[in-house]
Image (tube, rainbow, N blue to C red):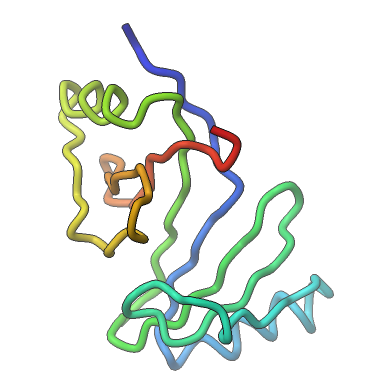
Length: 128
């Protein structure tokens, strides 16, 4: 049986150090969006600085990753059963790629990539 999937609440744009400040300024100063600096929060391994932007119904995270040469977009997918979802995706040629970035301890989730290489976290929603 096919598991249920739905878009999550978070999108992460991983940015090289040289592009981080200009990109934050674009969303804050040019577009006038609310930007929150979350650098004091626990940040994922490899992420040096992070800013959160309210982007309609989702949060757009701008993550500074100093060893990146270009920007990457990372997406979130919610499912009702992570194990069943990743098994289903594997049968369609989409393997688990947890080497992309360490997951927080205890998080029921896996990393995958779509056919063009855009990373997605497949996880339970915060509501269950």
